[in-house]
Image (cartoon, rainbow, N blue to C red; front, top):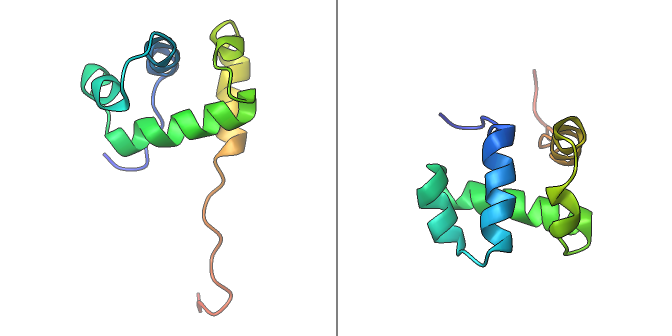
Length: 83
């Protein structure tokens, strides 16, 4: 289903697989999530961590959840849209 967040378990596994040198395509197939989703989360996490996901591997789930949820902003509604 579209626009659902991945679980913390999958997020930790995504970090672990990326750290071990696996491709985004491999990670996508292994975790059962779309390649674009893998790419989006990696971009978000890499930008937050300054390019070093190793620093996020030891972060508590609550903090990681906070990072992911506050960093992904919904698209702004255009001002010319009438509601």
